[in-house]
Structure formats: C-alpha cells, structure tokens
Amino acid sequence: MCLIVVGWQAHAEFPLVLAANRDEFYARATATASHWPDAPSVIGGIDLEAGGTWLGVTETGRFAAITNVREPGMAKGLQSRGTLTRDFLLSGMPATDYVETIDGSSFSGFNLLLGDGESLVYCSNRDGAPRVLPPGIYGMSNHLLDTPWPKLVLARERFAAALQHLPDDRAFFALLADQSIVDDARLPQTGVALEWERLLSAVFVKSATYGTRASTLLWQDRNGQVRLHEQSFGPNGQALQSSVISTAV
Image (cartoon, rainbow, N blue to C red; front, side, top):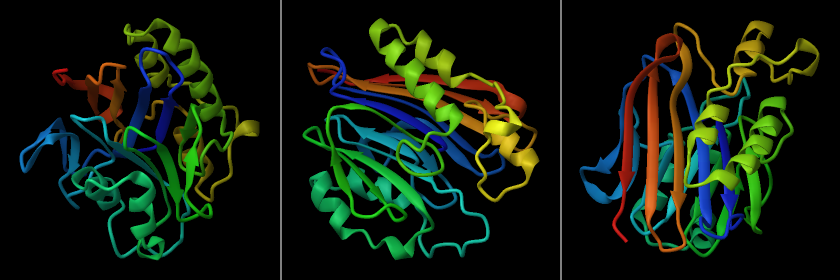
C-alpha cells in the first residue's frame, strides 16, 4: 500500500473514511477484496505470497492499513509486514495494546494505522513510539505520517473536499486516479533512480511491471454499517474487477 488518507471523526455521519491506493508489482499473487474464507467477519485483499494484507476491516469496524517505508539498500525484515495488519484484524485486542506487542526490529520499515472503533493509532518502526491520533484527516505514503510529499499533500486536500459529498464516492475515486507526475524540482529524494522517483510521484502509478493494483474506499457510518469499494487494476493501469461489499446494520 503506497498511499492512504483517513478521516477519523472528521464527518458527522461517517466517523471513519479511508481512501487508499495499493502499489505493487503486477506479478505478485493477490486475492481481491472479499470476506476471508478462514475468517468471514474480515473483509480485505490477501497477499497470496506471504499471507497478510495491506488493508482490511471487520464487520464491526476494526480496520488496519499499512504502507512500506521506502529505504533502498536496507536489509529485508525477517517477517512480512502484512502480518501486522492480518494479526490485528484477527485479534480482539484494543489498538493501543496490540501495538505494544510489535517487535519492530523483525520488519522492514512500515507505517501502520489501526482503528478499533474507540481510537485511531499510528505505529511505525521508523518514527518513535506509537501514538493515539485525535480526530482529523491524516495521510501516509512511503515515508512517515503526514510527510509533505506533493502527492500526499494534494490527496489530503482533495480528500477533505470529497468528504462533503458522501455518500457519493466519485470524488474519492477521482483523486485516487490522478496520474499527474510531479515536477523534478519538487520530487522527494528517497534513494531510488530519478526515473522511479518520477513514476512514484503520481497518486495513481502505472507502468508495464509495477503500479497501482487497487484503489479502495472504506467507510463506516454512524449506525455502524461498513462499506468497502475496491477497484483493481492490471499492467499499465488497465481496469479489472470492481467490488462493493457492505455489512448489515
């Protein structure tokens, strides 16, 4: 997952709203969003190589989402970062307790957002102690929470505007589909080649081998209903399956 914007208690009717793009190599085996076969109360995609997930939610509104920290040349962690989200969704632990069980040294760099209905918690093994976030709009890409990369600043601004149109979700998917490349002078310097910095500077990333695999909008309304809308993509941004999953109130 390479771009996440979340509104936590920022809308009176929808206390949780999350828009995200998952960027990955197209060759990596993935199951699209659905109820998990071995845990039907969980909704989300599955990384079929390591068994975890980049984004998931339960029927009661517990959610977890993760991004990688871009740090080329660093040794790979012993465990898959997707297990952090999976294990939280399968547990009944409060988010504040769960993050205390994480051994950050076992993983490559990550940013983790966890919600349990009572609190929104941010945890990163590259950014000090976990913290409970107050109501607001937050974003993360492949650095730390709210790092002002151009695409993240733009996404947060457009997310805030899109909140006003809920339950119409078209503005969210429009922001997630933005393929604009940032000018070289404004590109972050993350240690990858300039060609990759340009490619990855877009909200929606596309190429023949790597790009946005899924755009997802997740929300929970004040009555407790959860809705997840996922649009999946193939090489060069080809639109594939679209899924909408809602829970009963």
